[in-house]
Image: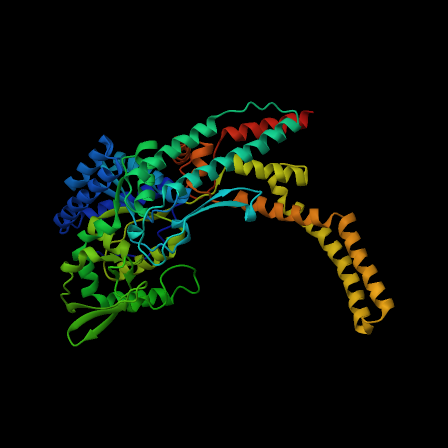
Length: 566
């Protein structure tokens, strides 16, 4: 593996696309100075190209653009950009927009470096089924509990996604019906409001067409998928490669991680250094959320796959000159004692199809093995990346620029618009910046009623303490209870509490990062990509919110203007 002298820096402070491009160009040229690993990287990229081709053949997304990228990868003479994620159910925008940032970045780097640039999306299909977002997706719905409609799937616990069965076809039909009911119901709310203020409302079937186009992709992915992870991974690939037209290469981690025998062996043979560095970075976290668990430094850097479809976490143990991994399957509890042989030269070739990197070693293995020039990560993995960077640098390994682009998309889709209408009805304004004052005012009215009810409750308690069995006290307590009921009725307490809950739901809708279905319905899949790309090319801003446009946005603006004019 290639070793370099690295300096510590924060890999996430790229506020503009230009800053990120400059960092990548600098890293690329510094990497060129070390040519000793060029043949090894070329070989690793050839191996990856085989697994990439297999995925796209399975998925049906082996387009001419993808073919060209595969050939560029196979040649080894390309700049390599990477991102990765679990194949989530109808993945939210933060997952898929990573492919968009890589696409725009690849265009900029191709201009600057005069080299073909390949973008790669690794699907962590060997992750567990227990994570919420691999089996659920949310849409904004102000009338639902907590302001969201959640699509869910029951999966076996503690099983790898690539071993979990895909859902029955009836589940797919249920999701389709839920989504259609959701946007049609919210659309009716918008129509009703527009008509109530005398605004023109010409009902369009564009949202329905958008949804049907998206659902065709889901059905095609379902027909090709053999397991659950492929349903989601194929859907992601079809969005990125077909709907958006990107040449992004996809591969299953459960397959392509087999090519990194040398990289895994290196970490194992330097396990003492790896463990020490990992312990140092974990202890320096100072309460930072995320990252590996506290005892990770004593854990073998990869999972061992069990026959039952789950995985075993292996703890490192020395015995003389030999090195072992001890652990048991998290699902069936089968115990494993894996002999890696001598510490200085561990032997893992026979077990490569049955291992997969743990969260922190994944970037260490991939980045050096493939000479990754940039990695686009997610907000949830930021601490893992910080820790991995520390370990890599202190072991003398390369670590490329890493960027995170996770803004809040601001737009008025059907769910957001229905929520704003609720806010308008409760506050007499569409100005959501007034939310806190509106909520505070309503909370104040509720508090006054509760204080009056509580005062009567204290009187009832005193009467009870004085002798609840006395007839006159019983009658007075009944009278006080009736007063409480009358206060609630006359002052509209139940309605206020409902409105307060609706206000909380409005806030949840407005800050929600919904799943890709929301984008598919409100923009059309291609429209979402076009607006993200336009933002990156024109603003080059990786830190501010992105303001996007929908047809629903026009309806609400028209209704707002008409209602003011009238």
